[in-house]
Image (cartoon, rainbow, N blue to C red; front, side, top):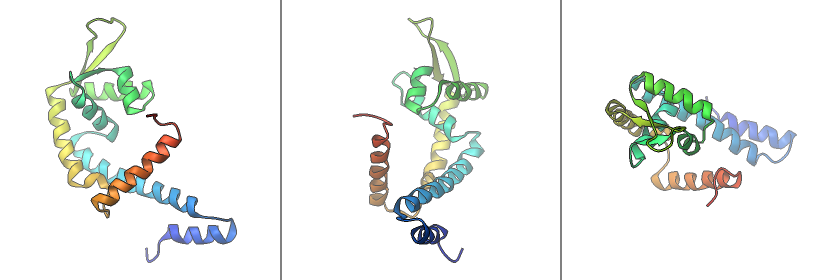
Length: 162
């Protein structure tokens, strides 16, 4: 496009509705999210993963014992229990994780990453890091600043507490 449609929308918003800074910022974030999602999906697809399944594998890799209760996975991934179940079902079907009984709590099921899951996570990580997770055009310092700004919004909305 020969012009920035978000900047043009902001001009029109300003003229017809009022201050446009927040509208332009949110519209920009939403567009960048689409760009990033497309890039990450493209990098993960050859590995048979979605971003949600990839995040689950990374989380299990980070766990000290390579397994976590499904409830904890949901909390850390910030997902509804039904979504975690669907993710785990698909990963298990693909042989990337397995459900194992908790050693001391019969009511709890643990999800454990398999050797194949580790290998797939490693391959997928190479793919997404090669494209910088789709976030291009920023310096390292700018990426840090962006992360800091987005963290402020997340914290202000109650996403987490410190």
